Length: 290
Image 1 (cartoon, rainbow, N blue to C red):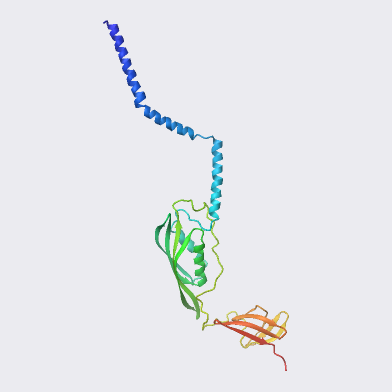
Image 2: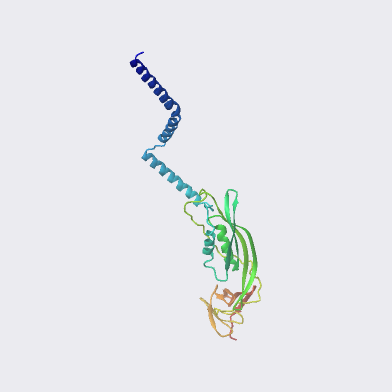
C-alpha cells in the first residue's frame, strides 16, 4: 500500500471520528439544553403582547380595582393590612383631645395574637371622667371603620368635689382588640372613616336624688317666694324675694327649672323645678288689689 492511499484513509478515518464525536455532542449532550431553551423561547413568545392590547388590559384591571375599592369602602367595617401598634394610640388621642380635664384615659399595650385568618393588637384602657365622655370614646372604638372590638368593660361610679360642687363621674376599665390582616384584600386603598360622633345619652350613674343643689351662678329667677306681678302678651313679670323683676315666657329657664305654662284665663304661671332629683310643680297667681 502506497503512502498516498494510507494518508487518504487516515484523513477519512479522522473525518469519520470527528463526525461521530460531533454528532454525539450535538444530538446527545446538547439536545437537553437546546430543548430547555426552546421551551423558554416558546413561553416568552406566548407572553409577547401588542402595546395597545396591554394598555387595554391595564385599563380593565384599573376599573375592576376601583370597583372593588368602592365595595370595600361601603362596607361598615374593614380589616386593614399590617396595622402598626402605635396607630391605636393616635386614634384614642384624636378622640379624647376635646374632652375636659376631668376625663382621663390611660392606654396600655398588652399583646399581638392570631384570630383565625386574621390578627389583632390588644390594649387595656383605664381611667375616669364624665359618663358621656366615656360613652363617646366607647362608641368611637366600636364604630371605627378599621375593625375594633371591646371584649371586656367594667364601669363604676366615682364622686369628686370641685369648689364644693360634687361631680358624679365614672371609673372605667376595658379591653380593646384592633384587627388587621396579612394582605390587602379586606380594606380599600384609601380609608374613609365612619361617623364617630354621637349624641349624649342618659347618665345611668347620675343619682336620682341628691342632697346638693347647684348654686344660682347665672342669676336666674328663683321661683321660691316669688310673686307674679303682671301678665302681658309677651310673657309675665315676676319678682323674686330680693325685689328683682324678671320678664319670662313659656319655655324660659329659671333657677332649677323652666316656666311651663302661662294661663291668661286664670291669671297664673306654672313652673317645673328639679330640686336635687325631686320634681316639684310651682304655680304663681296674679295678685289682685283689694
